[in-house]
Amino acid sequence: MEDFEKKVSISEPVSSSMEVEQDQEETNSKASSPKSIVDLLRKFLAVQQRRALAYARLKRGFEDYMASGGESVYQQLCSEITVEFNDCSKQVVEIESLFLSPDCCRDDLAHLLRSVQTQEKDKLHLTATIQVLKKAGRPSERLVSHENCRFGHSTGHECVHIQNITEASGTEEAEADAQYDNALKEAIKGVQEAVIAINEYLEEIRYEIAALEAE
Image 1 (cartoon, one colour):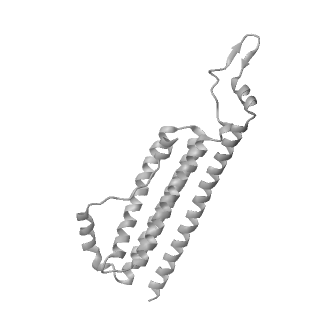
Image 2 (image 1 turned 30 degrees about the horizontal axis):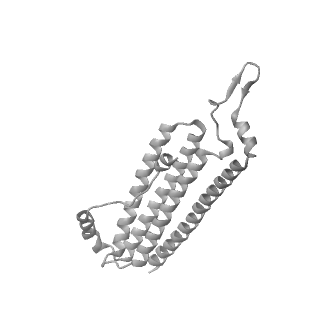
Image 3 (image 1 turned 180 degrees about the vertical axis):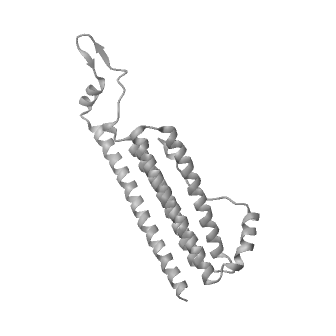
């Protein structure tokens, strides 16, 4: 289960200080005008659109995986999605650094972008958790192995699983199902909360764009 979850991940981009300094020297002087700030905010919104498309691909890919069991195809998709998300994260960090630069001094916008980054990271982690849980299925519905069962000419298949369930009265299985349902419910709720928070931040950014364009 852990291996499945690790297929989709996001990490903070790592750039050398020389690369960052060089990029900032070239762009800091242009980042303070209202038009430049609007351009940066629109660039950020474009990155968010890329993220939305990547999530759509991930959702379709997981549905296909659950239907067909194409493990290798889904692994490849997860690798591609990871690259896409990390590239998006790198671009957002670059924009954030411009807003923090002395020539721009828009810490408020940098904070907005950082808040979105945090929510996006949580959203992706919870999305992976949901897919792990759905892949595993509810404990009571999982396939069992019958290799330890007995087979007789007269009695046929004597399933040890039925015997065990009868002796335990299904209590442990019911508890496992309840834990599974709660974990899935919490993960879905977490994704919904992250989406709401992200949309609120994006609305603030759109208001900022409108205000700057009205100047």
